[in-house]
Image 1: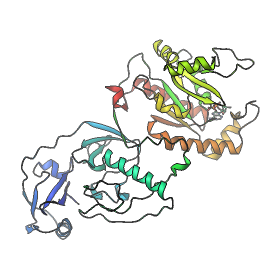
Image 2: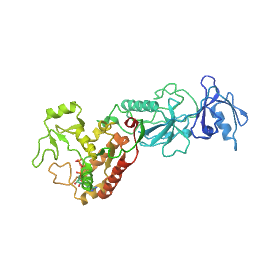
Image 3: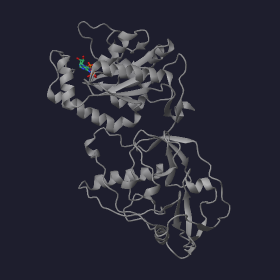
Image 4: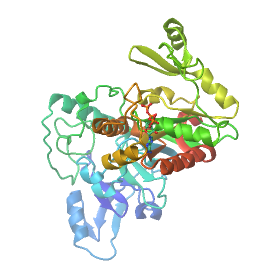
Length: 435
Ligand SMILES: Nc1ncnc2c1ncn2[C@@H]1O[C@H](COP(=O)(O)OP(=O)(O)OP(=O)(O)O)[C@@H](O)[C@H]1O
């Protein structure tokens, strides 16, 4: 329950009504007069000793105008110091749909990708946060990393146990015990029913990274370094147009925008030149180099190895070039290192009709056809869209930008702006890249 920027609860030991939290930046916080643990004795001259938080709410609902509290201060109270921690949210959160939040009105809704300023981590399960773009508002409650991790593990377990998908409703008005089967720790001061189902059947995501529990990533501003450019990583579904966009960048400034020549173990085809399309090497050599960490990313396709060497990226960066990479999306995690600090852009296809029309108009060549002699089929367009949705679901929280490749000129314009931003602006990045 939230009162002028503070929440109250019944103290489990004493049964008294006490201040549970002060919301940073709210009226209670600004007054400096109310502190966590203070006992609430009277509300509008009505004695509330022995009453419940719900009774207090009734009193408040029945009174208009100024509200007065009589409080017994707690011992040893501390001033609220704001933490400086910033995190990037890796999931969407809506307190209205969270049956476990102790007080919905005090919750802060956010979307995946939002930067949050965590102002207090005093409570192990409910942090207080503000959106970085919205510094003036009072802080709101969000699930802590520990709580969200438990929730995700619980949801995954539920899905593997039961895929039937029932959802139940609840209210959350006061302090109570944890329900059976709850993802919450038994000493959490929340209650609710079984958690609701998540939308994705992980069994269908064959390459879903089961170790990854996407909650929050601590971030800090990464400032540009003159003359040292972050590698630009273009991620996208096969055939979406990454090579075309890279070709346009290189045409614009071939000395600045440089793609390293990849290595492969596949035999050289007629017309190919080693060092131009690929650097052709034996499997033994490439496996040995992979084992000794000489590749920043590698993968196998149709029985042949492909990869990008760390040295080729370093060489481009050393001559002041912008290294442009277009690896398979599964390489994202391997590339996200403090040494490389990649700026990751997702190149997405537009909706089906737009995709089909633009590719028909440009007489686009299907990348699925080895002979490169036909256009894309409807099935290939649908597959491209499905693949893009899947990439977004699995890796969307790692993207610095997303560009829809509908009209080629417009998409290229957006790419140029994004690349310029990566060169010149300070951008939120994992905190351990910066320290
Ligand atoms: N916005 C666009 N409008 C029209 N045609 C496009 C657009 N983008 C790319 N194309 C065309 O689509 C075809 C495939 O593009 P491209 O080879 O760049 O795809 P890709 O993402 O690099 O594919 P892959 O990753 O499978 O190698 C090419 O013929 C290209 O000219």
